[in-house]
Length: 114
Image 1 (cartoon, helix red, strand yellow):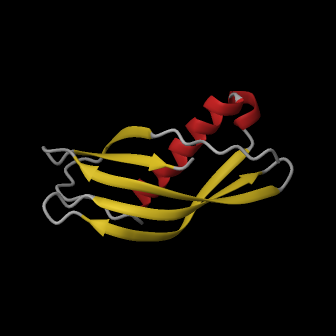
Image 2: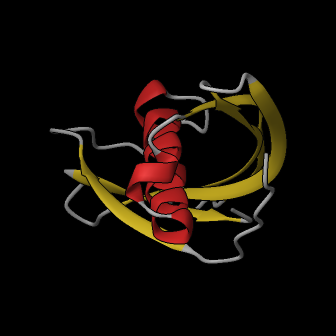
């Protein structure tokens, strides 16, 4: 499998209803969003057709810092990348941040190291 390292920062907003607190690094909504961002970046790098066979998992999740004033979290994790057609897989160390909007209705996830 061709290994591509992307240093691009991805930002996305996720509507989370009325969650007034910042979701934890390991919250399934956050990790699903990290995997979605990884998928989008793969599509940007190699094209949608070639990226269709990749699946992503987020594991070994660590909260590395929490801003006491805003509640925002800095996170580190291992992104598992599996190419289902060939069975090849690799792991990539990534970091990401999670922060809530001022109104508490949405949160942002920024992923680094893709």
